[in-house]
Length: 123
Image 1 (tube, rainbow, N blue to C red):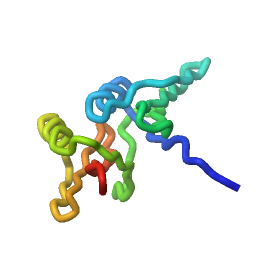
Image 2: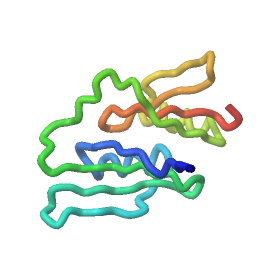
Image 3: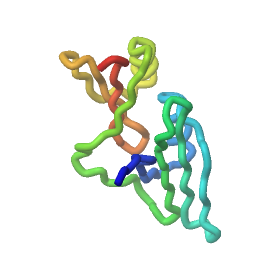
Image 4: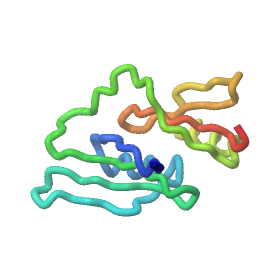
């Protein structure tokens, strides 16, 4: 039996703000979406040409506040071919939340507080 990871879900409070963030910071673009007939939810799958793995962004109409992520002890990692350019962009955007200089990695946060690890190619 073989299992292939295909997507990870993040619930988001402001869907457009999240779509803009993921496209600007990581180059992830909308691939497809599902909208409830009654307008109660919208699910958008974002991704890029580097992999067929997708990030599923789910917006719920009745959510009236940002999600409580607890201690946020989880993250999704991205490997980047130009670490310096990536770091410069994220530093300029003010979304770097933690750097581990010893390991040569850093983390950014999305508009809802999810942590995203940035790893240089070859690590």
